[in-house]
Image (cartoon, rainbow, N blue to C red; front, side):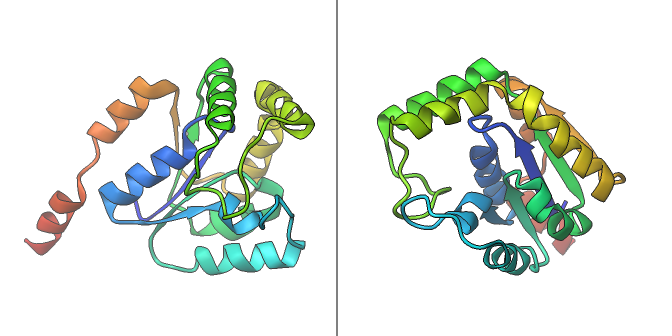
Length: 181
């Protein structure tokens, strides 16, 4: 596993899993939100975003978290050798998104100048999170099937399955030791 794409709802644990996998396997971590958003939650033009993603996934090894299916699957999936779908229950996702907004801590998976706050737009985002499986997931899954049908998919539902999956992976140290023998 040298190029991993992580998909799932907001609050599903994509960023946390990406950081964990990156550290465990020695992979560069790509957070698509940091490539997409500019300070103040300003969207870049489409080509600027695609250029950023193209450069980020040009490396030999990475773990990339984020959906952006219609915008970037054609850049990411042809290079990916594994997709991880986080099937975290929507109530868990919704609760995590609400909590991180209330706490308003800086996040490494967001660019500077983009902090979450409770406002009208955020309430709409909570609706997005609640309805993700019904409204967004089918389109993401269709795009995945169209662009990367042969890429292995691991589906993980909840923290226990994620822990079990991680426990079965080699650590960076054991991978290096194995490669040197």
